[in-house]
Image 1 (tube, rainbow, N blue to C red):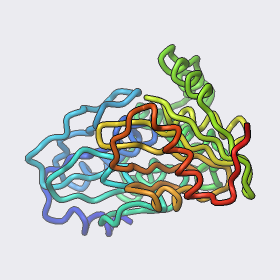
Image 2 (cartoon, helix red, strand yellow):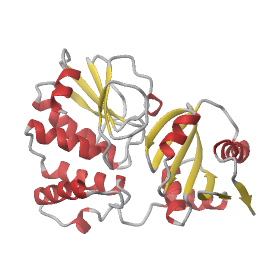
Image 3 (tube, rainbow, N blue to C red):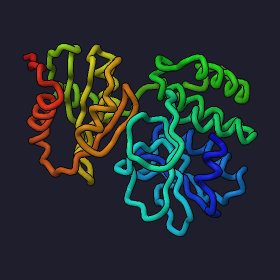
Length: 296
């Protein structure tokens, strides 16, 4: 992968690393490791930038101008970032997404892809980045449910660098949710609609924020597929989560976006009032799952 990365960045001197909007731990960890890799390759890194910020912090929101290259970390689709005028490559782990030049490896987390590049270039991962990488891998693998032997080997190496144990490093992630998140999830649960289908229970809802958290919660409650909509400035965001169903293909089929097998997002360029989101979701379920029948 390293030689391919060298080819992709050829001719660039100053680069910016950009994550998807509201970067989660995996996106930020991937970006921070890539910052070390690109610096080792002799590039000037303007910084790590997270459009709309990150709950974890540790990055700037405003994507800079005046760079030779934008390196997109954990970005499956250009719909996940603000419009960027300039040369872009992506380092990603999603099986479905936009056809952009870059390095895409099917791994449970993007952090693992960046760590493999770091190993090839011979860069040392400092303890603070290693701690973030542990959190990124843990959360993006569904609390290690999608982890394989290679994932656990990487986690072992990272824990050696931090000198800690897994439970201690995950203390903040496992803690009590803040009140705005709790309220959003409770409201979303009140709006859930259920459908019986040949593949299992399909659950839909809509919220203004924390849509990924709600979708994950619905799957943990037993839904085979969770579909959660939210209204954003660029249209309607549809978050998919599943147990064992390829939702990346579903997301790609309805709009701009993509993801990996059990977690994906799609952006539909429509403007709808909040009151129409339930009907929108009903139509979407009918379109994607013709055999689905609503449960009262």
